[in-house]
Length: 79
Image 1 (cartoon, rainbow, N blue to C red):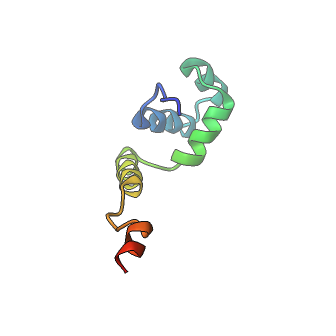
Image 2 (image 1 turned 120 degrees about the vertical axis):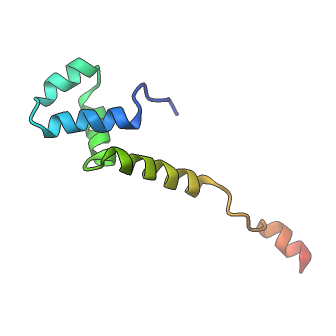
Image 3 (image 1 turned 135 degrees about the vertical axis):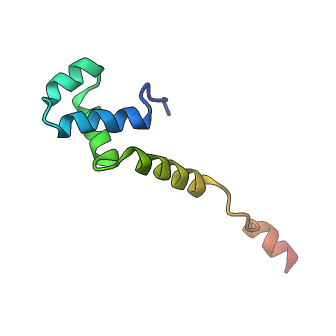
């Protein structure tokens, strides 16, 4: 997957600008993003604060980590 050129905190600040009443078309032009990108960001990060983004990243990292349990194939061999 392609890495974004914006950090999560930058994304949240862009969304906050839109919430403050700045025209969305102007934000797209200034930051060089498409309307689809903005919609995806709003769906994922809408309503979050900068501290919430940090917690979201921690949870994603925790969910991607192996659980430490034994693979099923090894379990069957020990029976």
